[in-house]
Image: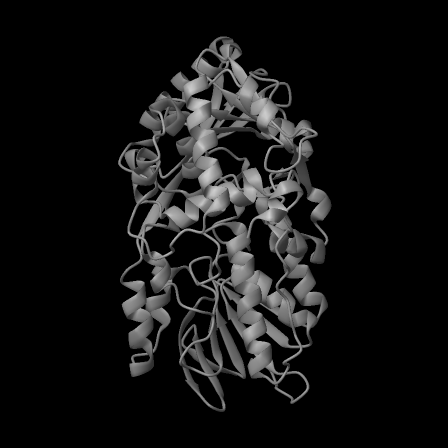
Length: 472
């Protein structure tokens, strides 16, 4: 049924129930718009979702997602939807070497950007030459604005600034491949600089890491209830098939039917947008921009053991294929009632997992099991009860040099149609924060088009602390 519009409560269709679409829908519903959200799956969350895996009988996240203290809009979104208390915060990161030696990096009493310096200097995983080269590069990243149009990749930048190979492999690669889901030689320098400045240097609060204590879809079901409570409608298993827009409204094609709305927010991944664009001249610029995007994969490996294999909630893993371990049976209290409560359920993450895409599940599990036993000696005595592998082949767009010039804004050639998604021009990379920002940007643009010029949804960035206040 097509929603009935009124001048006081315009109707809005939101295509896509991922974070971008949910952020736009929640903001617009809160501002008095009548929202209908269309999602092709039977659940919310998009690429940040969870479901009951048929092969294991377990609820699994499609991939582990974390946030940082600098993710001001994501934190505001969680606060808005009432799930802020479902995030557990950590001040310290643990870096593990094969064999199990740990180095912990966390804040101290020193002012930013020096707050992690004492822990960094104590870290056993890096030598003094490595630490000096990293400190030198960070000074450059703090003091200089970097050209967003540069064609230089970050690996070339690191080598030009005399970074040692251990510094590249054990610090820069470890942090940035996980944060940006791409290899260093395919990461634009400004993206890398933003991650380092926002998370490591800006303030102690900015670098705190938050991990959900519930399956991901539990977080976003709350957003669905938030929309419903404000008169909105959720339509599952109903992807939009296309649209036609004119100055009076938007015709949406859904399941062979036409529905009318005053406005439309298209919150789809870049690789899904082309199929819903009209065959019209207005689509040509967007299609030209989309042609420049490439995707990068993430692989999540889920392993269940019959006993505890580690006391760590999470850890960064060095020098191997696996980059992160998240101890889900410790992180998620709801799992303590499982039949396997005495054991360990861990999720392993491989970002930019191009080398794993063609491998079978059995090959990936065998590789992961071998590496886990290197890092966690207790795993050598544990029996693997079950496992699964989830490949997100088109997880994020590739943040390669020059891509920023092709990221579109939320505003389109159609006056009543707006774009959202972590790939649009948000000034952030493809992260949950970027997705929420895109939703809020689209919602603001829509509200302004509807005459609500006073509406603002976007939260300000976290302010710099300590000595970082001296730098632009």
